[in-house]
Image 1 (cartoon, rainbow, N blue to C red):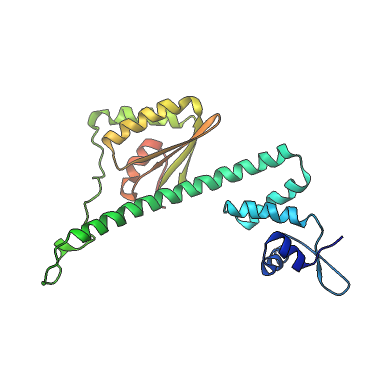
Image 2: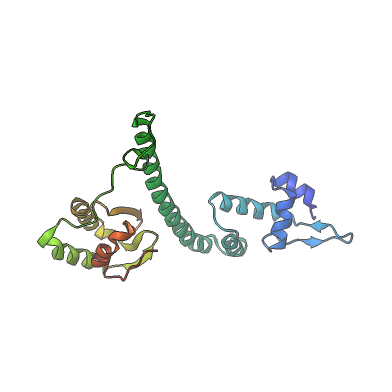
Amino acid sequence: MSLRIAEVSQRSGVPASTLRYYDQIGLVPTGREGNGYRAYPEDVLDRLRFIDAARRLDLPLSEIGELLRPWESDACASVKARLRPSLDEHLERVEETIAGRSGLRDALWAARAHLDELPDREERCDPSCAFLLTEPGPVVACSLGDGQAEQITAWRTLLSDGQVERTAGGVRCVLPIGRLSEAAVLAAAEQACCPFFGFEMILRGESFTLTIRCPDDALPLLQDLTGLSLVPA
């Protein structure tokens, strides 16, 4: 038994205009009745539920389309193996966005607090009272001195156990979970001498993802730690 677009829309909660768009891009293909109306199979409702769940995770439609094929035909274990990397990559993108937005949020809060503290003067503003003149960030320089070479060697030894890649605002490396405590110790030591570095560790079973971020003017120092050739992204 086939379903018409109005019934599919009513039962799924997906607007008819969205169903037509899904048809156009091949995400939810349809047949045609003799009178030209779109005809959907009964299982289209399951497909739409999958698409809705994936869209709630903000996965792109192109990626959803690639996941639909194994979901409808392969074993559950195969679908899980295909879906996990997609979720991992999307999670990392979201974490990067959150980190960037957190920095912006802190800057906005600081700017607003500084603005509220300014006196209501009758004179015109001058640079000393501009609301953007909040406290400057940390100086981009390593204070470790002679111990810097030893620290760099320790970082490169750790990172050699994974694949370091460039990411927004820094670098990312997936490492075995057994190196987690070593990474935490190094990150804590690095924060003490280079507070402009930001470190994030996300645990995933037998591995963890280490992300190191820094301002563009600190990229030469990050390059020393990683051995990568880095330029502002």
